[in-house]
Image (cartoon, rainbow, N blue to C red; front, side, top):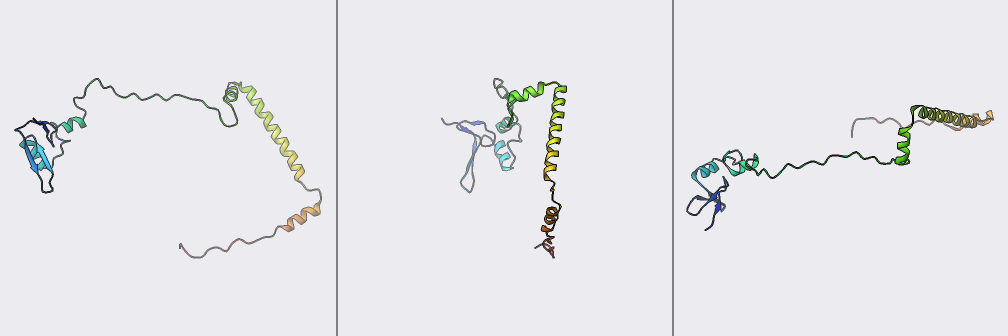
Length: 152
């Protein structure tokens, strides 16, 4: 005894029941009743017909209650070291008092200004003739001629 499945509704077809449709291309369709056969011929989508198995699967009807929803894993905060600074250094800076941090910043700014002053003093040439010759060495070179015409 072979039990078939209806192509349209998804219900079982017992021996002696149902109807078979064979199309010109050789495909055979087994239907439970004339109701399913007619709906197939009218090209109705079984996923939109409420009494079919496909509709019930699509709309999650009659599923077992044992299956629980999947729980998403909570994202956890994770701190990593930055290139050039370990995590301990970062945490130490974070826990510093604002006065200490401000004093360090001012000291760094002062040091940067002093180093800048020393660099500018060294860069100034002492010989005025050498300065003039450097200015003459640079020639005014015209840039490339502007392009004429539109897009290529």
